[in-house]
Length: 221
Image (cartoon, rainbow, N blue to C red; front, side):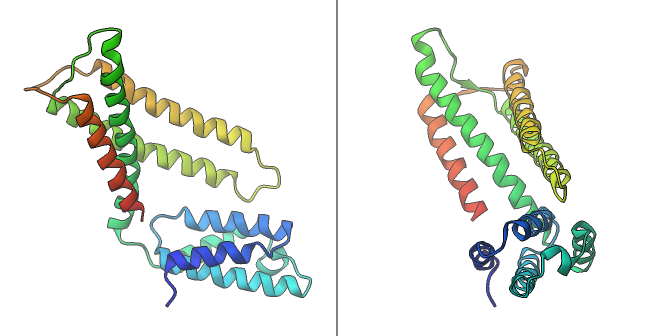
């Protein structure tokens, strides 16, 4: 059995043979299917490959993807989604966790850089309060979860439309990203110092940030 990762690579190669019209039709269908995080990735990729082969065969006979799959690809995709097995919950949690760790990793790198350069201009404390930091980590995780949900929703609403608005969608997604980062920055400055504290210097932040980014990468893999 070909694994999901290999199917994705093969799918990317085969799609280059599609006409512009068929590529647009199939790409929207593919993205919509892959955004269903609750579905089995393996089963989803196998179905996507079968449909792609069907479209390629039809294209050789002068047919379009719309002629083969119909005028309502979303409804067709929804019918398939109802029949596919769901993914293990741990895989969905892993996906969200990898995004949260990624964001937290960059935050720690930024903190380390701030502690390294900041003292040249003003006194900056390297103290860390575990309770406050725990609340901040929770905020980052929730922000990542909400951000993913909203961005996926934006993408879904942009699919299967004759007239797409990529600039408008990018602005919406960018605004969501800025709001999430703004919430995290505000939480950093305004959360009170709770419980005991300990020193956490700049190099420790760099090491932690690098470790978190590495862990995030491994989770994605």
